[in-house]
Image 1 (cartoon, rainbow, N blue to C red):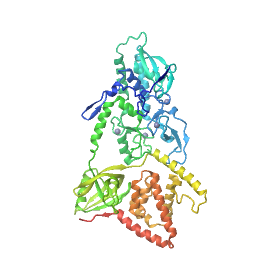
Image 2: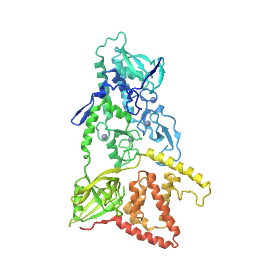
Image 3: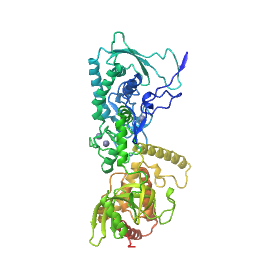
Image 4: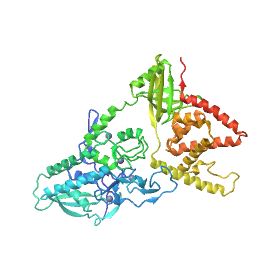
Length: 584
Ligand SMILES: [Zn+2]
Ligand SMILES: [Zn+2]
Ligand SMILES: [Zn+2]
Ligand SMILES: [Zn+2]
């Protein structure tokens, strides 16, 4: 006889939905809301289902055993180190220039390709596993007389047709109660990740209060691993656990705040190559599931506290200064004398010392959902590093660009603009690598086809930047800086470099520095604020250089070119160094 079976719910929500849907376990329907906090009782092994689900939280999807040297990949999935597939060579990937980035590992759970360099042992899950193995074995020894018979009930993949004979699972006897027995069954390799378990007392087992025993065991395990669930930045239970490539896990918002000013892991001090906003960084599914299932009330309370701390949705709480172009990581000097902006600066100084800088919308173009506004929708959040109040009320303000943003909503407050903003960030480095590989690969094959027809102007890197890898683009741009230095280009003068710092070695920030020193129109530089990948920014800079070089070749006299550059440079230099605001 053929039977249609379906898998029980996957614990991390990444499996495909089953048809027909499984009956919702009792712990899932017992929802109630208290003062805005959603509470759900913790999974506790009162029932057979819960003991099974708890063990599944720490079972590897590949080998079905409890994790051994668990590795959490950038896609957020965890498997044993020995269960990772062999790395494969990736082509056309040059950025980021980290160790082993040319080798990729396909996640056995979701199929996403991750850099080998980013697949390291998950420190938190490893510690949890060591504690669990130790505690379960001691518990089992102490309660060896409570012997249960466990029968594995296989749950084949969706809609798979299998015979009744194939449905026969493993049967084994274990001491220590349901939770300990299920764990041990997984250790022995007798429990498939998807399988359920049927429990019965073995002959001679007199234990009546099995539920109490399991609950005691559950509580002792929960206490044992609870400190491992603390974030090393805020020392609270982790909220939305996010793991770095070095294997350390923090609350997403804690890691975000750390990466805002440093690229170093707060625990091991290794470089962390993650996009600072972490918007696209998947959470650690394993730890998130453990937290959700074992500490649901703590997670709900933490979520509530953090959302209270964060600013209320819809508030126009960021002061906006419509004045000039500012760039992330670059200084911007301001001279404030208009009364409404004096008030704005005073409020900024009393608050978080941050405000948004926007450019004028000179051409009155439509700004997305905002329509036609007097400013361009993308800007840079500035942090006031130095504030000098002059005796007559004017002030000299030294700021530095923190991050890019887009205006979502805006209004006026006491004469100056205020708004609700959304941070603009780069795509994840994983996506960046895939983008580079696809773009370079496509451009190369197109160029080969096109050039085979011997056109008058063949497709080369000079007219098609897509042919260059990200690092080749970066090197070409840096070479231009070196060439200009050798020619003593005035816009690379000592004075400018002193204001903006030396040429950065980081391809992600280099374009901002280049834009800060290069004498071209601010509308051109503005394009950088809208980019969402390092590659996109480098291509923009590369095309500026191609255009400037083209102009230089067309000009008969070198002096004319230098003269023009010098004039533009001095104008641009003053414009970006000091912005004067006319008194109303
Ligand atoms: Zn495994
Ligand atoms: Zn994955
Ligand atoms: Zn934290
Ligand atoms: Zn670390």
